[in-house]
Length: 447
Image (tube, rainbow, N blue to C red; front, side, top):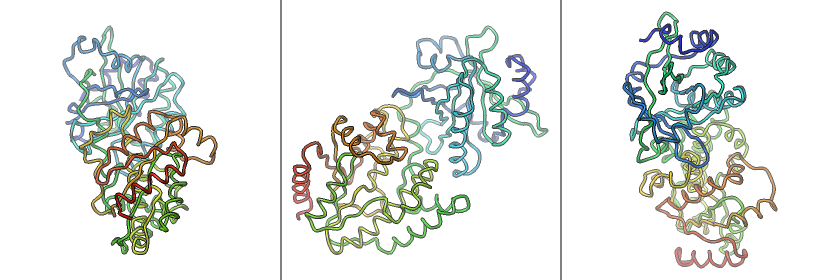
């Protein structure tokens, strides 16, 4: 290990030295530390761009930095930090990551820019560790002070980034704590640009962390939350009851999907009347008392809650389809499309390829006969939203404000297969849209 006294000269004030000495690390496991140099790092600069990727190199060259403008933009600061949430179980990591984000954004000085970061091993499933990269344009003492207080309360891994004296290269220092309680640098490597991987790193983290492909996987997440989120027990009980009604009847099941303000509610009501069918929604009404509670949780927990909602809806579909056609306002396609679009940053081109396993249908979830995806132009959708008003979830608000996110969600809808979506232009008058969808149902479901 490299004693801390050998890097004191890179810490520009006595306070910074004290902050690093006391608090700028938490233990890295030996296994994690030994593989640290094999990991790649991806930082989101925003604006719909690809992430900035960098790697570690013990023997770098200034030439490694040339012609990489995105890398230069990332390190256009006086000092950098990266925080890596790698300790604890998956529930603890998810909640700590969320708490950390809120704290950094609210308490760091205005000289700091907080960016999303992941470190990962390329093409290795579940190797993604989430965190944040902090650009400090002024090398502020307040930044050190906030991090010092934060790391006294929580257990995260921390790296600092410096240019050494008269050096054009950036170096990463990984901090840890010795058995005697002294803070020391356990790894030092130069930071260099690296190639963009074939798949976005978040893709390896989607399956059963962001999108759930079995009842058991989603159930287990909420089961682990019972002590910290007591409402989880009631949700699990509701989900267990649906398991007794998984065999569907002979009548067709039609799902209507689409972004907000595309006319889903109007169409589903009209279809249920025209077909004399049952009208259901996902998430089901029985989960309404707990939606606000789980919407405030990190993606892992929130997505598991909504995944179980689909299974509860499946139980309702099975019961109703024995008596009449079933029309459902949203189902698994919505859960998956929103989750994938949120997890994968940047443009729609960054989404997993069409052949990716992330688009496969859960093997134990009741499958519909037809999925209709309603689309409207951005201008028409905005007009409808303004006329409608009402409260919005965090994702709905982002959807309204972020055209790039809307494009990703729609594209994710279209990439889901078996069953794939039948895309319908919902811009014309509602009577015309209803007529077109009824014709489609007649052709597909033989009603």
